Amino acid sequence: MEPIVKLENVSVVYDLGKSNETWALKEVSLEIYPQEYVIFFGPSGCGKSTLLYVVAGLEIPTQGRVIVDGKDLKSLSKKELIEFHRSTIGMIFQAFYLIPTFNVKDNILLPQIFRKTSFSEREKKVRALMERFGIENLAFRKPSHLSGGQQQRVAIARALINDPPIILADEPTGNLDSKNAQIVLDLLEELNEKDKKTIIHVTHNPADLHRAHRVFHMKDGKIIRITRNPEKKAPVGFKEKISELERLAQLYPWLPETRLQAKLILNHFLFPYGRDVLSKLELIIDEYLSGKISQEEMFRKFDAPEEEGGVNLYTQKAKELAEKVARLAQEIKLAQKEEPAPTPLQQKVVEIRAYLLDDYQGKLSFEQVKRLEEVLAKRISGEIGKEAFREFLDRPFKEGGVGLNRRTAKRFAEKVEIILMRG
Image 1 (cartoon, helix red, strand yellow):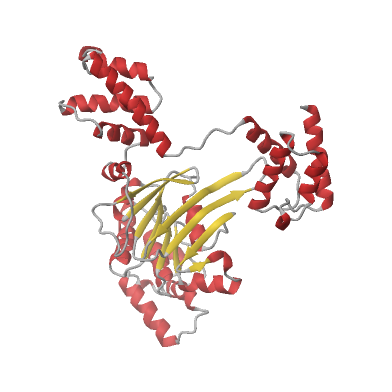
Image 2: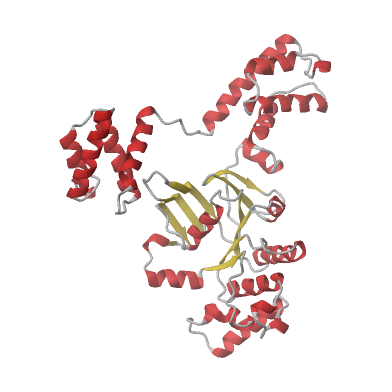
């Protein structure tokens, strides 16, 4: 089965190249399958709503491809994008966004206005949806006369009126009390299981996670972990490779990364000890992985008597275990491909690039900024001279240059030379 949503190396960057450059999303790749219920989960500001808006075609990524229902959103014309919004996705927002001067019925019918459907067909659809969600008696009320739960049910009906295959829900229970929140969440689950809709749900509430097939955990604009719900049957044809660490994450979805790693490490060793001893070992390993204690301190805790807070292993066994934990922890770090710290040259390149672009009134593409960084690195390191640097800035992008106009290229080159002369 082909994914209904596919993102390839998607980044969203605001104030690109400037000193206040902000990465809302950073090199996100994912696949979501038809009839799957997924959740983007993480704290406020982690990029989950931005990711949802990228899927909706409301946010244009700085780089990468977004393919939804077989369509590459970047290649769509304005007319095609409008039709995509009408027919492919339905959106549910935290703030409802109902039109205050329209009654309930007209708010639900709004997406049907520009579709060539007969009056009788529209009436049949809206009546069925209002009956399904228990709001038929509110048809002629204005939104201001509805409770929060009633408004959200109207918003869900509006999202379904054109029968889209994908429903996007951005914190749909954020403005609701617990009772109405439960009703809305049950409706989303029903739409997935009964109506076979693909549901993409954004939330920061861990209590919602059990409803999804998969959860994409987010932090600082990245997907840091994907967990699958073993109690939910995967959509037909869905296959994924799951690492041992991810399997543990599914069993213990609330544990922090280092605690999961501690469990993973313990699973590599067979101890003839009881549960209490294993729990102590796990906590000590967690302290080591979190950077709270050194390898030597970990060994001492393994070796120390129980009355001193230790595990009371034999000294040789404690030493061997500490060495194995340190070695396996290093292997985990390598497997996770942590980003290396920037070199002094890379830091200098970023500083100068931001200095040049902060006052620049034009707009460079993501690729142009990267090209600018490449040539700055060559000039700072002395690989190319002043004239070659200016010529590279002025050269068209298709010919391997940055693609600036001649005047800007000259100004940037002069600024860089002043910086280099001052050291």
